[in-house]
Amino acid sequence: MTKLLKIEFKKILTYKIFWILIGLYFLFLSAGIAMAEFMINNMVDNTNKHLPIPIPHVVIYFFPWVWQNIAFFASIRYVLIFPAMVMIILITNEYTFKTIRQNVINGMSKAEFLASKLLLILLISVVMTVLLSIGTLILGISNTSDISLAMILEKSTFMLGFFVSILSFQIFALFFGFLFRNTGLSIALFTLYVFIAEPILYYFLKSPIVFENNISTYLPVNTVLRVTEYPAIPVLKQVMGLNLQDSVSFWACCIPLLYSALMIGVVYRILLKRDL
Amino acid sequence: MILETILSVNHISKRFGKIQAVNDLSLDVKRGQIFGILGPNGSGKTTTLSVILELIKANKGDFQWFGQEPSKETRKRIGSVIESPNFFPYLSPVNNLKIVADIKDFGYEDIDRVLNLTGLYERRNTRFKTFSFGMKQRLAIASALLGNPDVLILDEPTNGLDPQGIAQIRELILSVAGQGTTIIIASHLLDEVQKICSHVAVLDKGKKLFDGKVSEVLAVSDSFELSSLKYGALKEAITQHPAFQSLTEEKHYILVYFKDPVKAEELNELFFKNGIILSHLTERKRSLEQHFLELLDDNK
Image (cartoon, rainbow over all chains, first blue to last red; front, side):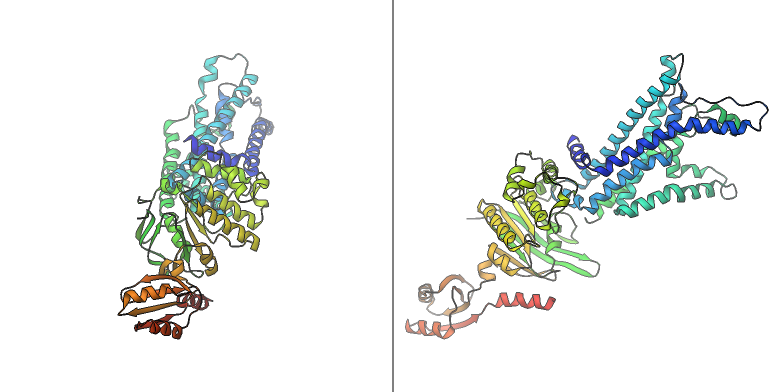
């Protein structure tokens, strides 16, 4: 296992595009987090113009809600797309450079090749979760007066939810990469699916005329996004009538992980069957 | 002496859609041989190598490496260059070779040696994508030589190299073979196979046409089929011939190879003078080589 990770490290260590995309991911994420509070309060101000009793400004980065809010912003599609692209590029590169062939010739099994990519995904997900947790901790501490340990820990499981989201989203990307092999095609089809095809399907299935059930919530990308459904902003509850999520549900984590397992299985079968 | 079989290929067939790329191919490569797979473009050479390296699955047939079923462990004992040199363009030769060493469970101590052998040591830290084609090809050979593999598989090793590079690579191959490494080379160049190989199999349209020692199959010198009732005397007389090179005993005749061109009349006269009456005399004038050249022409 360490051997496979060692090999993956060598492949990415001096790969500029990898670091640029990871850097962009952090940039977008921090920008998003920094802007979120400002934008919500802007919305509040606009709403207040028509209200007799103004709604007070919101603070979203205090314990315990900060966990949920950061987890939410870090796992929206616009942000998660970066690590997903990184995965697609790393996998399709192996086909473009034919290094997957060379790895197998040199004595790597196809299972090991797949495992090395999955280990990399796991590692990236763990590192991102740890970094995000540290960031959230700092943000929370500096925005909360009267901190208690219980308060800090209360909703920290949302970070586990984020871990599930980033892990499974990258595995979806891995699936596209192995399936189409070509970098441009894989990225195009993946973004098309994530941003256009599935949302359309989602609203189609959701419309009560078509189906009177919640089948739409079981679409793969949707299950990833639903792990942390909404940010915990009390005012939204009042204004929009949303039901706020108290904690990360175990079942909500299971569905994207089941999809991931299924996709890994399909990729493995494809690898075994297909000539290199 | 019974030589250990390094590779045994049994009745392999591979079809790509309508094209029968390899057709019922069987081969045996023994330890220490420099085995050439000779054939025109599209004759199934690379497909055959891809099958024995488990890149593609044969439709029929099987093969064994070192008497074992093929696995990732047997592949670790093989160094190979198939088609184009495959490396990460943004990595230096050293880092590319470290990945190879990691996969094969070798240490990094052999990397400098193979880079020196292939003349790339000075460029060891420049990125692969800045390399010329010839340098890329050399790195592929360096990577194949890493850790002194038991078998070296080279697919068109001198393709795209300049004359000097070709000479260097051939010298390198021969020196590696001199250390006892078994080598399998696929080539469409008759000249290359003749210069480097000890054994050869000739392929066309996926079928093996013939195989054997290069000196016999692709003999440039002329050969004759001879037979006589005075078998012993015939053998003795022929070995005295100044141009005599080698001799193999077939069922009904002996096959004699000469270093220089020899005329049939001349031979007949020689034997007659020695009191040997020939019952069979057939000239086999470079027939196999001609056959191969005809194949190349057909394919053009």
